[in-house]
Length: 197
Image (cartoon, rainbow, N blue to C red; front, side, top):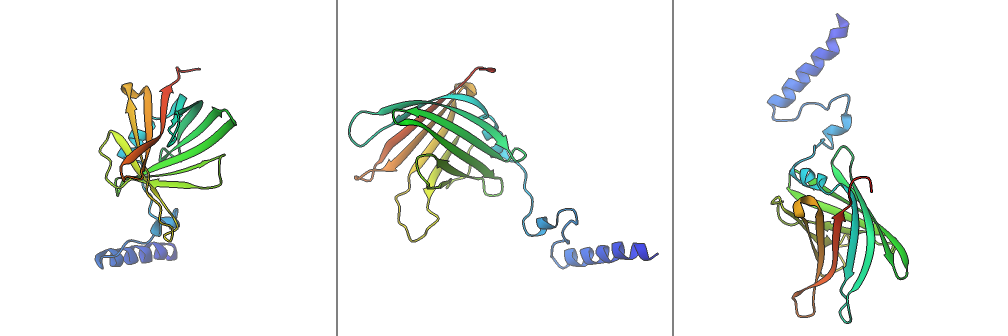
């Protein structure tokens, strides 16, 4: 009879907590869930799934003066952590040698917003971007964010769209110009490679 006592106590505590407007005690199999509730993939992840695969990349950088600089590259993208995030691994073959970059983007179903991080072999900085408006289903718009509130930086904006029935990704980065108008700084055009290549 004593073995049933812990279950009875748990049931009474759960009933009291819920009737008082509280939350039931955490699942013993996942005690972290009481502090950090689990969340599953949403509409944003369904969109990101379409980015997975191997891609040929054409990168164009637009300097303030002079001609655009074009660099070829490749990219492999895959959904990770149970389909919650998209990881992108880039390699660019520039005139100064190969550079690499890693991007991770996720979507919070509760807020409807995307958040991304970017690191690369060109610097030791971590770039963080977040959307301002809820996902509408056809493009991802992100704004640069500073983790240091004391630093006043002009926010750049990126727009990423799927085109040609998912066979092409166009990613453009804009920055505010001296006149306050946005200026295109960089464009990535990713073309899906045929399977097995």
